[in-house]
Image (cartoon, rainbow, N blue to C red; front, side, top):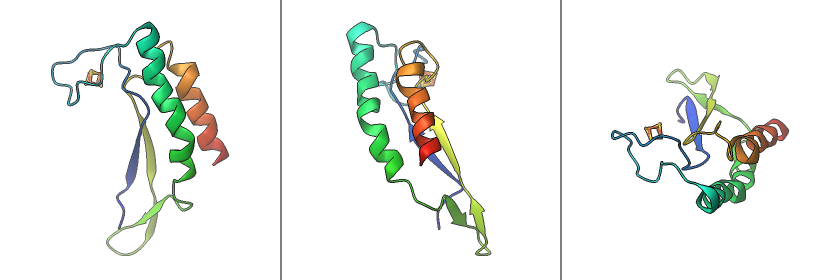
Amino acid sequence: MRSGSDLLGLTWACHRRCKHCYDDRFRPYVREDLKRVVGEGQSAYRNIIANLPEDMSFADVSGARKRTLLVLVGGEVLIDGVREELFYPVLEEIGRH
Ligand code: SF4
């Protein structure tokens, strides 16, 4: 039985440095470092989306099929250097899937 949601992490780029963050790879990246970290997501997302299940649903405890959620998470996907380079293309690819 699958859960009701699946997470798709897009990038480590984030404009904050929260002390409570669970992973120190989430942090601000600038210039070439931003391109590099966004490039990791750019090189991975098509394969990840291509391997999503055809049926994005799960069986609840009664066996009934329910739709799952695909939750897109960052870092921060709306900042300059991430939004148009990675986030929008990911949305378009999901729409084609
Ligand atoms: S990923 Fe979330 S918790 Fe971590 S630094 Fe960014 S905003 Fe803060």
